[in-house]
Image (cartoon, rainbow over all chains, first blue to last red; front, top):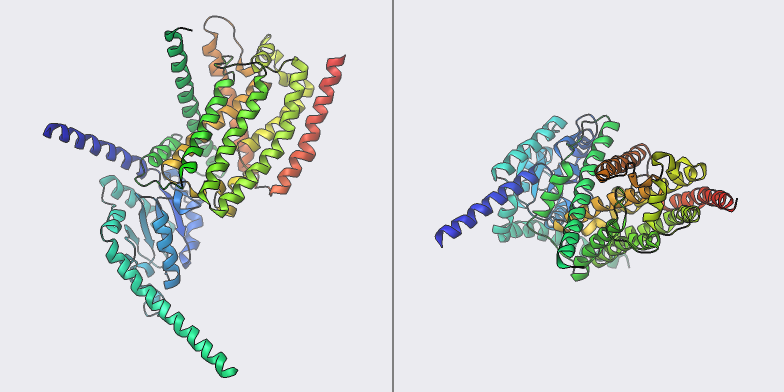
Amino acid sequence: MGLHNGDKMMRYEEWSKLARKASKRSLWMVHFCTGCGAIEMPPVMTSRYDMERFGIAPMATPRQADVLLITGYLTVKTLRRVIQVYEQMQSPKYVIAFGSCTINGGMYWDSYNTIKHLEKYIPVDLYIAGCMPRPEGIINAFLELMKLIDEGKARGWERYQKYYDKYKENQRRVFNFEVKEEEKEEKEQKREKNEEH
Amino acid sequence: MDMIGIAIKITILIAYAIIGTCTGLLFMGIGRKIVARVHNRVGPPFYQNFIDVAKLLSKKTNISHGWIFDLALLFSISGILLTLLFLPIGGVQLLSTDGDAFLVLYLLAIPSLGFALGAGASGNPNAGVGVMRALVMMLSYELPFVITLIALMIYYDTTSLATIVRMQSINGIKSWAITMPPFMIAAFAADMALQGMLMEQPFDIPVAPHEIASGPMVEFGGKYLGSLMLYKAIALVAETTLFVDLFLGGGVVAHGNFAFVINFIVWLALIFLLFALSILIAASFPRFRIEQAFGFYWKYEAIIAAISLIWVYIMVIK
């Protein structure tokens, strides 16, 4: 029995190695470009740097994509959309955070409205430092991600499943704050209206 | 028929399906390479689409939207496989019946309807818009295509694809339909219809990624998208083969014992040339709007096809 199980494990290992080999050479990405980093993407996609030669292609919807590329800062409002997009993607899925803003807030470090550490809310597999990172940096990050996938180290999506409650707690904390603020604003507006009447 | 005969036939059917899929995926990869060279890029390796399919089929989560969503894909793939089996490939036709030229037209509509079912089951508004566009496109390109098909049927006085292919292969290349002036015009109209069938630019309106987020495919991911890619690969082979059968004699140039090997290679070269032509057109033109595409097919293409039909009719009467 033990041998049999061992055989099964071996076979599973080999299959997952093959699957990783395939998914490494065909990274389809959905780029979430609300930050200023979006301007670095066109040269990467078009003939100057041509990322399609590595099998990387932009996809239209999160359902079809493997990589979520987040360019630049995220406000609390856009973070909610990022989480929606990330949860719609089908695992194995990877996140690349682009620019200093996703690492420590960057030039928005003291803003009331942006999140500072993206890692708190969704699992990031790879950061690209810089403000802005050059297209070479983006290509380099994708090659690095390929290496991580090949070695089986890009396990952000498993981390998200395992510590789902922790991630949700962090997310709820910022969102509740936002909701409270909105409620306050609404109340104030109502009060103003009442005073006018 | 005895059991062994049936077994042999089933094996050949499966082999055809595998050959069709592999050829389609290979062509799609080469097509991406051609587009990349037109853009002055390096482009992905020619086997990229095999890797893509392998990746999609090995995805861990696959979100379904109900049993219609699951069955729709089977509907599409089985429909297009059946079409492929009814088409003479290098002069060899596996399944045949009287009037199979009409049958193939009906069978070609099945995958689109399956596609529409699946997209409808996903409930995404983008998918709904995409399906609407796909059905309008089908309505547009089928008119010129059917008119050219009728012209061929009148000239060869048959509704059987096998007979059309046989009549064209009597004198080799000299007897291909495309060498006759009226069918040259008809072939142009049919080639434009083929562009619409393949959903290549300028007629990729139903799957426009930037306008409606890839239309009917919007909710497909993982294994579902992988099977959709397989369907697309087979569809590519089937649709180009239909054109080759109608105008280029099905690629039949040799007769004799082992002629089918040569014919098969010629057929492969011909469908590749057709596909490369359509890819080059796709790489050089931007996307039409839906009413522009409709106008193009019903105004210009349909008139061109009608001229060839009248020409053929006069030839036959004489």
